[in-house]
Length: 288
Length: 329
Image (cartoon, rainbow over all chains, first blue to last red; front, side, top):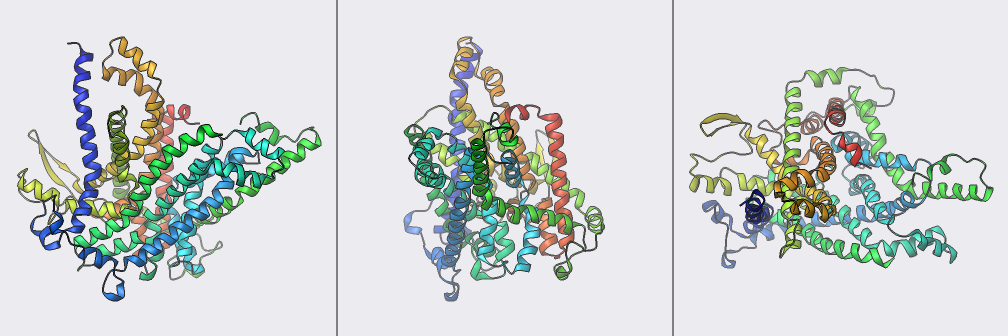
């Protein structure tokens, strides 16, 4: 047998080993998170090595503790979920409101400094957020915006707009310019063209973008920690969970239930977006 | 895009209608971009400039009101930061952490991209699942890792002691170093730092995977086919056909991952709190800010972090990755 044949055979087996390892390594921690959140804590401490528990052993006590309002002796995650949803949705909507016209400008319009805008955005994207954290911490303390969800939302917008413009621009440049010319002939103004012609065509890209911004805002931790930590009523889920882990009397299974509550919305959105991305992008390409 | 540039910059003797049209376009362009520019200016650019000023003033949260553009400028913060115990070691830790995580995530990403390239049943689902560590909230995944690795009730230690025959549980996240003997050789491993690097590689390999997979799929099939017909082995095809195609992406990924990891705060803070030899610079900045309320020192420290990053990137781009310029648009 020559080298090519030997290697091909070895790699054919090795490939399946790699795939199996990848699936286990990426999925197992999430499975374990879910499993632990359903097992009673006494049982986990006795048998930490078990990776299976039948439905008969499951308990929802952990979830009850996590979701019950703080006033009733629970951890009040419903409140945190609402905060997170509010901040993330507001950040998503406002980011898109700024980035759609911005991306259109960068993709289509010739204006002074167009070539430098890219550089600025790349710099923002790659900038150490810890460096930004200090002045914003000081500034927001002075303005009284620290401890407010609105302040946090503004920070998220600033951090996501540049990437959002970059992603949308790439999509907008694939839409043929002749469509806009036709719209102009029909008497549409530039803003009307953007709203009635470009936006419907770019809908899949806009949706994917919205999900991306939402995920970033939902998962963010540092700024939430810096700005909101003082008042429990303002906590986001990420922050609430991190603070929960500091509590001594909180059991690890409750912590895992909190993690599941934090992760599930993102996983659902992600798998929805996965389909939307592939379907949307291929459908949008040839319809123009 | 290149052809349009002279028109925008030289008004020249164009017809007046043409001129007003380009002026209108210029105005519309700036107007459409203005909300973005304002937010970025107010929340990013100005604060950064302010950090530079704060770094050269003695300011704590208590006397913040005194802080202004015309404060007393001093090098005291820089001196304090540079001479404080643990500064150089934390810079070194940051570097080791960054290089380890960057190399690790790109290597795993490359292997994953090669393995998941061809078609198989369930490929779409596997490809999506592999992205999970990257999209899941950092707080949740760090906690699962903490629990999995816990010496008291962690799965890793339970299996390690029962099945693999470890003498005693290993505190992966709180033990500074550990003796490891491999083939008779004994050497010290910075255990907690190593664990954090592995976590980081796990969490960010999907990022490299996405980039590399996209590039792999754009490689013309004829190239590989021709090499195969000539009797090239898979490793030879990889080395001489695929790798040259991937090189620009790998160089770009190296820069991106390096920058992101160098600045990373969440992961280390949540996993170890910066203890057990994992104190990276960003965690130090946070500690200066929240434990001591020393804004000046925190700013100086953050500035050192940013300057170090710029310096390292300059070295990298100058000497190690000439292909980045060619591959980058």
